[in-house]
Image (cartoon, rainbow, N blue to C red; front, side):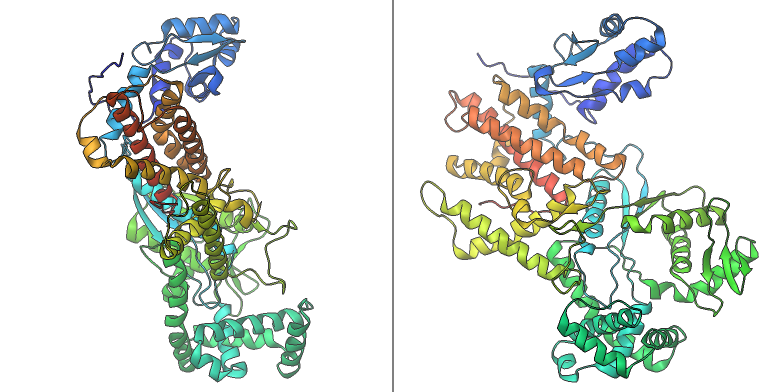
Length: 610
């Protein structure tokens, strides 16, 4: 017999937070400081229930009593009878909790009717500035930019969804030495016909040629024989190329009319090429204030730091010294040139004046750790004590050989070509799924192509986000486009499977939600799915603990797996009663909406068919 549920609005941040708050008074009655004990309450392995409290063992050491006895004391004081079955004590003192089906049904019904899926907005919203992607404008984006771009975008989206004020700023490298290379190359090495037909391609070629020639003159030869021959020829005609590049850079920074005119000519085409990549990745920025924006502020920054005696002269250079660092931070060289550190300090000053953030996050690879430690220390000395500075570091994308992913010529793999290959792989995956359908292929060629763009680029982004951001990882097209395992196609397929059910049953989800029907949970797979759905808020909070989007990918993968078990065990359209059919359709709908929202927070789309 199906039990209808009387619905009432319960504001719930997330299941885990609610359970921990239920434990707080019980633990407080036994000891004073309980925050670390509450952290020991986590989701359980399925065989042990839904949640498990492992705090009795640590608490037993404090109070000097056996762990199982302490666990029993906690259980006796615990008030969870409205939401949980009687707690069970296992092993040395684990407290296992299983959520009541009636309570789960009630909470899931609230999520069904809530456009935010019962995810609360932050009670104390903060203002964040997120600095991510930040490519050098003068050269094409490469595989190394994918991590900063997609990790930063996922953090931005998650913070915004949770109700924080978030400002993204793409701090473009549009003013440094790389433009000195391009300007020198343009003046002395350009192919005018190429420049007329493909200006960005020619500028990229010139940058690479000048850069490799500088490397060659410094003792580093290209591996490719053809490149080596070209570089040798250029090197003979252009000795001391590094110095010549620096001279062109200095002229640009000093306002040389010719170099400024070239810079203004190059910038629009270079930005257009960048934005073409961002459009495919579905990444947008609130601001794109590059290094050039701060150039006129640098002299004043140095003067202010000198006036406050934070910066001092040393061998003709202006430096900031720290007790905790062996080397100083140089903010103006002896020849008067400014450095990245100077620009970064000017950027902090501007952001604090303009947006007054509570936190500034820098999504930059781990090799810049020392720079950011010194930068943050300098900002503190300057007086910026109230703001949180965070270097959200990440590891390197590796090839199959365990080394940074490169082309055969030794160059970093271009990001645009990587996207093209991902879409091609996505197309193969879509065709594989479509061709294996029992009734034969269903998708038109146009549909296959459009779905492939979503699946392929989604797979590329997800393959990066699924990693623990601080570790290196080996890149694999085969793994990222697989239909099994923790991949975007696997999660997207779960969404498409729900849409297939709705099409076959001629179900309108909006009408279904509006009917205010009861949810009923009578199979273990239904119970497990309801618990998984209500953990969405937990996953989002976990993302923000240390800005790790892989917490969300793990959640979505677990949700897709749990839905697959539900799909196999619980007939939906052929359920044994109308009430059960409606309940299961509502669970399907909530699953699809949660997957769609979760993937959207990762910057990944869904497809209605697959």
